[in-house]
Image (cartoon, rainbow, N blue to C red):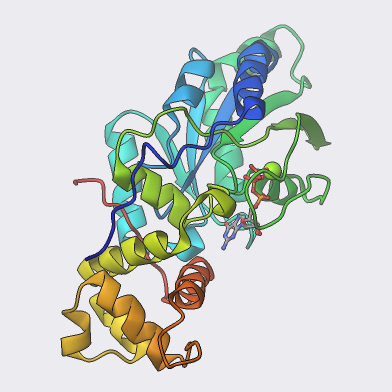
Length: 290
Ligand SMILES: Nc1nc2c(ncn2[C@@H]2O[C@H](COP(=O)(O)OP(=O)(O)OP(=O)(O)O)[C@@H](O)[C@H]2O)c(=O)[nH]1
Ligand SMILES: [Mg+2]
């Protein structure tokens, strides 16, 4: 029997996130446009409803970051979906410095009226101020470095790296980096699990074995072939429940404790790490029509 992730137990909304939300709300009036970074593998689960509220009334673009890790065909569908909702949306990979020019073009289109007005008033040289927001670890600081061609914003592969706001300027742009924020109550176990899979929630508060079993269950449904290839699983293995499968994978990797039982904690850590390092290939965990 596999346990389920319980979104009432997975909550990570420390005081600094509440403060960041207020900071974002206060700085709304100081910027021309808001870029909300989403994780291309989970665009729905990574869209923070509190960030929508805190940035209301500002031109808004959605950036599907880490597109290099997501299923290309599904990302294309997500782009079409956002456009059908009247929202500007661009897929990009900040780490590979791809998609920056498209973002500049989209910002110019979004701000065309404002820029025209400025030109009429002889303020054509005025700088464009951009606020970058999103959940923890989604790649905000990496995006800013890539967009500005600098390495001014500190970035690392764990949530909660950026503390406090930071302006980074380059060319005609001033970009405002913000710490990542989650929200108080996730709407479902699925949202909580998706955020945990991609590393948006501090691992210390998660039960790694439960997380790995949930990930296995999701991959069994959506990408059974990849799972089979990576861990050399038979049809019969694949048909087991996630609890059994965690043991099978652990045994195949030789992760045993004395007495021959499987070290399921080690196996779980390995599974989650390998998923995050895209060892299973490009994977999308959400589709727009679901
Ligand atoms: N594969 C891939 N990795 C990325 C991409 N963008 C960022 N990363 C990685 O994601 C991790 C987090 O990046 P950060 O830029 O620190 O994320 P952040 O949103 O600023 O995180 P916080 O400040 O903690 O909220 C780093 O290891 C980056 O290298 C991308 O487009 N593709
Ligand atoms: Mg950051």
